Image 1 (spheres, rainbow, N blue to C red):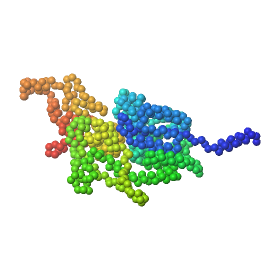
Image 2: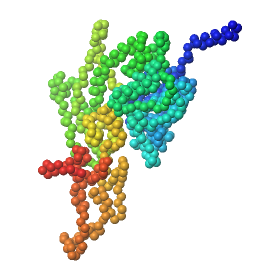
Image 3: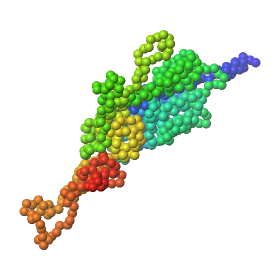
Image 4: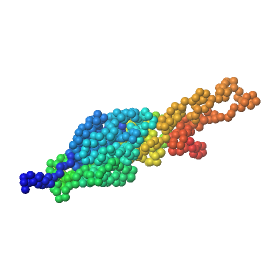
Length: 589
């Protein structure tokens, strides 16, 4: 065998023995929670942090994690990430925040967007096509995960420059033009997603569980995500994936070779463990253990996970106690209230709020100026416990009383502000969303209960009530216009009568009758008239008789608009019943 043949054989052997080059995987994670012109979204920041920790634990080469990006920052981040994707095999983008669909095109909304007009979306938002363009250079797989299928407050407030322009709830279906490209939505096109009551949304929690499993094909992973989300939401939310892949399995994390030793070193385990401890929650620790099931840091992670699970009841109790606004408490627990025995809880001196609303205001916005009734006194918080056990066994003196960690979820004021914003959207509140849960807010939630068939406690703004309001796609409470105005879509417009007519108490334009009007106002008009001297005028409804049975309010529902009878108020029972003489119920409209 000559030298050339020997060289070729040696080169072939070396090529077979060399391991395949590792794929380069890059990811961009964005979470927009604090919007300048919209209520707070509590989950996107938490979801983005958990997804970033999961991808870091999965061994991605680059994971860019960004929070609360304005338009300028978002444009720069997309441009820089496009450079990262040029020499990558797999490129992933995860976005959590507000998104909007207009005329069949989906847009991601930066935190500083105003969107006063529908045309502003072209200047202030970023189309999903722009995100797909940023990851187009990736060689094997391009994946965009859009967790933005929420009820969007911008869609309700923006002015329409063209009446035919469509702005729908949720997002529109997409068809990626590039091959080997997937676009995953948290909810099916045209539907909205739920944030849930936990630290992470149901969709993000399912992604953390399945997306980074070694060797798991993406199509199966998203199938498992769909099953978990539908089970967690009672089949109200169905995630969806658009695009197609080939016949080979495609996984974000390659499968480990059978019998091969674990490639992670002690330093890599420590780095991933420190990232998980920065979040210090169950999802982050579970993601770490899924990537590093054995070793010293795996044992530490299991101990920390057991500690978090053991302290969960204390954290839940602290969250429940902190949900009561301290400004509404009437008594001080420490030291006992004056006039009570030592060691006994002070009696609740706060009167229960009156269940009957006697307000006769026409505009709901006027009711916002009323003072909210005092809430019942806060219950006595649980006594703090002095740390004992190991400290005492080691001869150490007991330290100060251990205090439960503070709540990490949204504050009661943030939940109240979000609930007020959603109540405005469904037409049950006309005041501003300022986070002050006052009497007007309680009445607006009572109206929602009446027309939506729910039974939420109106004295507080709960997360369950907020989720229920968000599920309503359109107006729930009927629009009420004062006398002189008529309902025009979602607005009250002033009624302008033609010449020779006037607006009667039934809110209708009525033709003036000059002869009858002159006879009525003339001082010399006789108290009785003869049918022979003057022709008898046709009988018509007396304006005074109309005024005697009309309150000047107009109520409109899905069937018709009609006046409300005098003495009736829209905050009474659903049929607007008025007690008449002898206790007989008289229907007001």
